Length: 443
Ligand SMILES: [Zn+2]
Image (cartoon, rainbow, N blue to C red):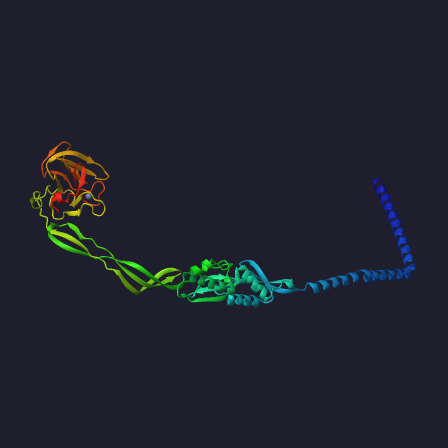
């Protein structure tokens, strides 16, 4: 049963194959017949196709190429491109050069014009295609270099070989220097001479320099040049008197008395005066005429040695006991008056040297202060007489205490207003300060 079915299937398949092959054969035969018939037609059609392509090329492609060439030619004529070197300095493009040497030449030209400075650049070149117009010529590189480095053509004023000031215009500068010099004619001196060697140099200068002035400044010019002038001046001068000292052995050491006061003399002197920028620097005496002669000052100087010991009282004739222990380095350092209204006699001695009461009496004041007298004692001797002892370093009496003549009452010091160790010894009569010197047997 199954075998019969399979056989039927094989027969069916065979028949279908036959049909298919037959059908294909018929189709191919039909096609060959058709192409054989239209060959002439095809040639005409092909000619027409070629003609159409040719016309397309002729009318579309060629005009397009020609147009492009014309445009390119026009562009090329108007904007020709070329090879050039891009020059970079410190990473910045400073220009395009056709030849690297051009840049070096421009740098050299800048350096040739620079007076004080030196241009030192480290260029980096790279090849580029650029529009011809962008290529820099020597002068434009030169201009770029000087403007980027703040250099400009100017005139330098050299004073004694040193650049002093810079100004853009030489003639203006020269005129301004003349004005600065002429200003000293106002001092009305015989001659006006510039003491400096002045020179003007033109070239490239740094416009950022502190010496650069946009316009000439007369006062700045005056400050850098030295103008010497001279003049004659007549003056009446004081001729100082001399001091003649006369020793007097009857007076104690430290005693000085002006017996004849000095008077200055007068001279009429004529000088040649030298000025620099109006300031006097030197004068030479041309002539001198005596108007009046000076009178010498005469001073009597005591030479009598002061002897040590608490009981010595200048020969015993003094009213008061000598108030300071007679140590060898003790002396009278200031008298009454003393050119400054001094109201006592100052006796110097080392700190701690005993101070003695000038006369018996009662202590009426014991004061300790930091100003004026410092530590001081006042003793009342009766009959209106009082003595004062000041600048003490120590005081050994109390108010109301009775003291004897020559009693050790205090020690030398420099308390209060004092510049050295001493006692400022005052004598008061009826409350009025008097010169203590006669009371101490000084004169
Ligand atoms: Zn004094």
